[in-house]
Length: 208
Image (cartoon, rainbow, N blue to C red; front, side, top):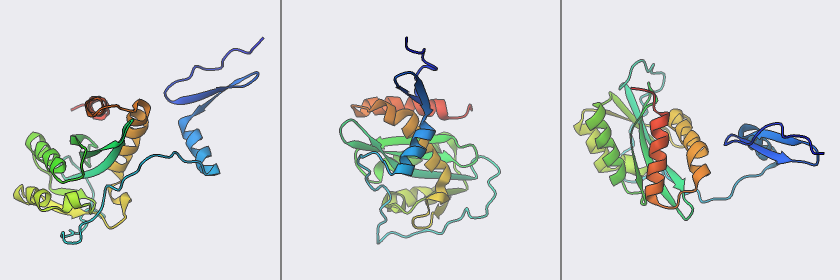
């Protein structure tokens, strides 16, 4: 007679039945073991932070700066959202102190328009920060994006080249969003992705 299952599978575990036992393994352990033996998933990973050679790069202003209140510093970043067929691009604007997502937009192109739209929404809904930090991607160094910041009286800060750690909080947001929402759903359409990501962000955001 087979032994009873030791646990039920969930979204955060993987269960494999053997001849006698069932083993439940967390995602964290699976990822560690995959890294150890050199296994990795195969999917499209488009570049989202390509600099423009003619755009101005601003200095990084957050080094050694204590972030002690909301709206002292915001940050923004673009990531790709894999779909069942192809992918979309997602921009989010986050407050560094509260980690709250202030605005976000999806797009099927990498132009600056959807980033500017998210920035304008964040300012309209939440006021303005003292400093706004991004990477050196062409969307954020574009005339439209930097002019919106300057017109609002916001100081512009940009990460060092290849320094993802300079924007570590929003990088953590992307990791959580993809493992807890995007990779589990394989969205078919943009509207599905928009609804799913919107629900996840509503859950993620701290209570106002």
